[in-house]
Amino acid sequence: MVKLFHNKRSRGFTFIEMSMSVAIALVVFLMIYRFMSSTRQHYMYGTVNLQNLQEARMAINYLRRDFSCATPYIGGQGQVNFVNMQKARNFVFETPGWSPIAAVNLIKCDSDSISIPKFAFGSPDEEPRIEYVTYTYEPGNILSRKLVDSTGNLKKEVKFSGIENVEFKLYTHQLNPNVPVLWVKLLVHDKSTYGSDEIGKALEVTSSISSPFITSLVNNRNWRFETGHKEL
Image 1 (cartoon, rainbow, N blue to C red):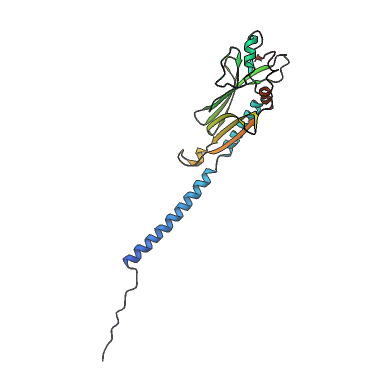
Image 2: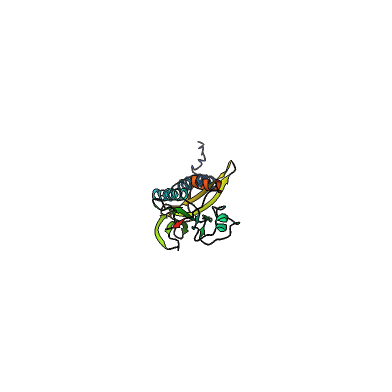
């Protein structure tokens, strides 16, 4: 009797097959990780603390109200003579062509701060009363609004938190060059959500603010500032 023996191959994975399987699994896991990481990053880029966003919107509302009431301060005839008053009436903002004159304060705008002389309404005096407001960016993600008197002493302060950076610009649009516009950019960054300054991207809040009163001053220089102002 002849017995036939069959070689039965052992069932399993060879080293090459296992290596390929592991490599494919790693590629799949890597793709899933990148997708999840990208989704998380996009989520964090658009996520900010609601309170911080409200603070930024409130700051813009304050700026809009102050800028709409803004005016260059020119002292009365007892402080500014006729010649200097005629020079000052040609300016509203501090520009490279402006030379400082005593008892004259214009609107000053820097990249991270703005100083606004503005009307204090409700005064019965013939000469309008002027008060000063400054907006400055301070360390600790705070934009500070300070109401000061003519000597720079603080009268009232409001702080807006959760703001990573600020930027101010004054410009006129080419379609309407007779209207000065204040452009404001606030970067809102919620560190409590991101957990690190290196993660996430600040939400950018911008606004363009115009003032009918300032527009009138710029385009009607022949009649303004005849009596001067008074400081609070």
